[in-house]
Amino acid sequence: MTFRTYETSGVGGAVAGDLLDVDLRKAEVGLLRPPVVAARRTVSAMADAQHAVAGVNGDFFNISETHPGVVPTGSSSGPEVDGGPPLKGAVPDGQRFGPALPPGTSTEDVIGVGDDRRGHMARLHLTGTVRSGGTSIALRGLNQYALPVGGVGAFGPEWGEVSRQRAVCGTDQVRSDPCSTNTAEATVRRGVVTGVSGTVGGGAIPADTTVLVGREKGADALRRLRPGDRVRVSYRFTGPVRFRFAVGGFPILRDGRPLDGLGTAGPAPRTAAGVSRDGRHVYLVVVDGRSVLSGGATIPELASLLDKAGADDGVNLDGGGSSTFVARSPGETSVTVRNNPSDGTERAVANGVGAFPSFAGRPSGSGPDGPNGRLP
Image (cartoon, rainbow, N blue to C red; front, top):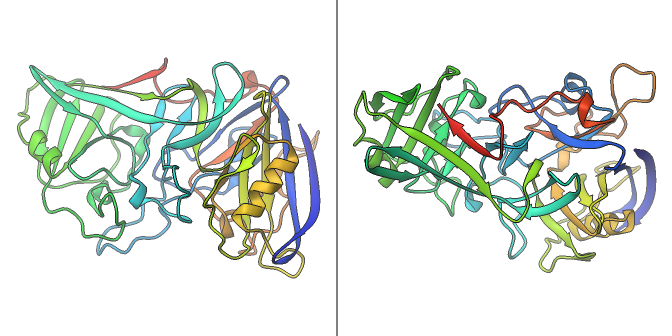
């Protein structure tokens, strides 16, 4: 791993930041995350808990909420993969937080490392089914704060204790649209339905239990289940890459060229991740902003920084007060914040990207083994 600071200039004046170049032939990059999906932690806390040498903040997340009586979940917008199987799916494009998506991109876009130990930027689409007898219901969500209209989503112990009510609020196009009034929730314990309710609940989910949440047509389908019915829930990500680790972020650099239609909003603190053309290197970049020492960068300027660092493909991660770079030197037992967060201190975030000396030294993912997931 090679860490360095840099100075340049942009439309906002002087720009300063931090860059980490990770050689995947000698080190590992993985997901930094809280103990559950619906939670937030600082990058330094996650890095120390998972024994990372360095790390940056990750995907955009559900930081605030405008629906009356509904609490923000703190969970990320895009997919997460930790150790192989899906940990969570992507919310609909209109439900995400952050800058407008460039044309042709989606909340399903990720950056990560595949089973081939190479870095990749690709798209991960969740597919799954809920089967009971001769009935099959499409599964369109996994541990995510917003479900597609008419869809059914699965929530496991990885979700946490936060209410699942947010999953049925908003629409595929507008995050602030009202919550659905046609909802249902089915609890499945050890493959058997134990209850069906019209109310979406909260609280910790036991290790042997799956909670299915539906809205509109999805709710109608769940209401046809009866206590005692046997149910099998299965899911997987489909896409061109089998990821060992992946985190959501929208593409800004592809094949060494900035994407068309990148937003031109004023300079701000930014975080990005990129991969080299051969996939052997991952680049983590943080741009400081909102200070006299560094005015920040626009998204096109961020794409240019990734390109100059050596990336061929790259994504924009969460920015503003979330932008954080942490690292520890040899002999140190904990990381320290190396950049200047614009809030004046670290912000708790949904996830991050960590750098590790080797995969063998990193705690494994908590999901089921193999490329496919199956909830109890």
